[in-house]
Image (cartoon, rainbow, N blue to C red):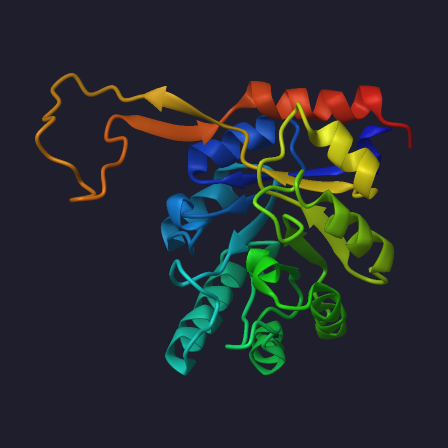
Length: 253
């Protein structure tokens, strides 16, 4: 497979991660905050700095909170404003998704938000994996004019979701199906061969040690939820390059 035949999107949790993704040969970043929650909208400053300092296509996740994808009218106003902000800051695309209480694509809300995102690439994110009827959801998302769907095939990982992803790739008429969740150098060959997908989403992160010398082990910034206070997850140049190398060397066009 030639390099132009596939695209790698890196889920970047910071400016540093986006810069590493750009220098590692990735095609695009999905910029997120709140990674333990599955990704939430990053700050204005983060978006602006990535646009200024990372020479790579920039898609911004627009998700006002963690949890489900059933949004109130007030939350949809926040989403609309965040789309506007991302567009003004020069983002190439946005990543979003709204569902109804019954697990269907919220077509009415999505139509409204698609108008806000006019002129930008739109990815329907893993809210898709919470849909009751995936093939029906695929059709609704295509009718909305979204450009791609990020999905783990409604399983815990993209590799486990290969059967549905393969079906989605075969059924899709206009939208790109992009496997994501647990994609790495050890399984991307199998996922690509078994599904026929040509765009892939991965975090490719590693943990780097904090530079702090003094450390107060009695206090956690997460309160009762203990998090790694003295480590930072960032994109790994080595892991990104390994994934690209696997695709270039092992797959036939």
